[in-house]
Structure formats: structure tokens, C-alpha cells
Length: 340
Image (tube, rainbow, N blue to C red; front, side, top):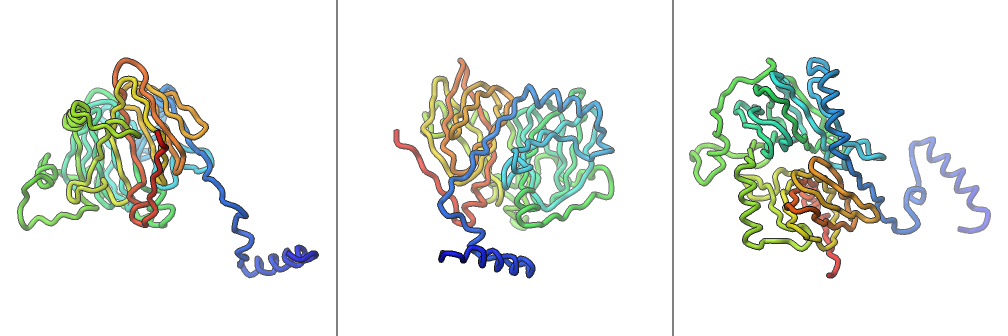
């Protein structure tokens, strides 16, 4: 820039600002910048007692849902496109029926014999089960057991409600929905046969993934030696209609790290949130080292080198949710693996 022109440029910038304009030169970094390492770890020993405390002082009549949100400093949410929270429904409670434009999923951490009703069908909830409530589906939760039930709420509201600004929601006319579908209806319709006149919409199809079916599939994959160098034994939760990602904006995986496994470092443009289902281990994300145990949650931000290491005598199991479908939709997904 010619000598003496900086003051002239500053005055020009002020004139533009008064017109709600800004020069491109003020918003472009002078060099390529690496994304910040926002990797974060939340310990179950911190989450659980505070969730129980919330159950003592926060009534569902006051808040509609009782959740603790995992918040990454600087983001005010868990990740740019995906939020993970932990929800508690006490014995005898009902979380009232509503629907919203963002899609949500539930991975059950603790409890059994509760259910979520999605568009008129009750979906059973026990530890390890995973269920979806796609965009604009009516849903309510009920715990008819004598024990609290706790699950992960994983949803795409940061993207749908934040980036896209689509914030529609609606309360159902009554606290709960009537059962208009028999339990198992959606599961049957998503199988190998269905009535010829039953239309299926891949983005609006509720689905349940029982742990009693998922865990054996993971163990069979391990027994057959199906192991990825970067993720260990890993399976995708798939959309039953398309066979692709779980939802248009959200993907999920379950993985097993066998004893003494250390994975190969890699990085990708998607942002991943992990929950430890079983076991213990270590994950290194860039310059951060996370030692984790059952119940802990942690994140791997986009384009950060990361690798996992199993610890202890028993295999470790990790559930994860990610925004890879969004990146792929815009042809922005990239992955890079470090050479062995």
C-alpha cells in the first residue's frame, strides 16, 4: 500500500460502515490459518451428579425437558452443526409431546422399560438402544419404570435452527400422543417387505436400533477381523430406507477398540462427538490428550489429527455422532490419513 494511504483507507472504511458496507480487504486473513483446536472432554463424574441434582430442583412442568448441554467454550454449543445433551426422565414422568424442524436422536445410557412415542408409535428405550425422531415428527417420552432413565440427546439444531434459521416448533394438543401404530410397525415396514402402497420418506422415517441387535453385529465384525486402521471395529447406523447416513444432517457410529489397539492418526473435515459406552482409553486430538472412562464424552473438531488407544483388559466401545452428511452434501468432506 502506498505511503500515507492507510489513513485514507481508514476514513474510507468509516464511510462504508455508515452505509452498512465493508471492504473485502478488512475481512480476509493475510495467510492461511489452521482451524482452532476446540476439542473438549466432559467427565461422567461431573455430568451424572449434576444431572441428578437437576432432577431434584428442576420440574418438567417448568422446563419441558430436563437436559444438561455439553457446551464447547467459544461455540456456546457442542459443535458448529450438532448438539449433544444428557437428558433425565425420572420414574413416572412424561416429557410432553411436541415437534420441531430440527431432527433429534437418543442413545440410551442408563435405565430400561421407558419409551418414546414417535408419530403415534411407541419405541422401547433401554440401555444401549438408539432411536431417531426425524424433523417435524411428533414425539414424547415416558418412563413407566421405577428407575431414572438417562440418554444422550443428539440433534442438528445448531445447523437447522442456527445456520439455516429454520426454528419452527409446535406443541401437541395433549401431553402425550395416542398410540396409532402398534409397537414394531416402523421396524417391520423398514425390513425386506412392506405394503406396496406404503410410501417411505428417507428423511422422515423414525427408526429404532436395539442394543440387543447392534452389539452382536459389532462383536461379529470383530470376530471376522473387520477392523479399520483409524477407528478399529466400526459400524454405521444407517437410514433404513436409503442405506446411507442416519439422517440428511447427522450420522452416527458404534465402534469397538480391542485390547492393546492403537489406531492410526487421521483427520477429516467433519466434527465428531463421542460418548464412551464401555471401557477405558486415551484419545489424542492435536495437542490435547483425553483419558476417558465409561460415560465420558469428548469431541474431535474438524481437521484435527486424532488417534485412539484402548486401555484395560476389556474392549472399549464408543458411540459417536458427526456432521459428515452435511459436508458430503456440499462436496466439502475430506479425509487424510497419516502414513504408518
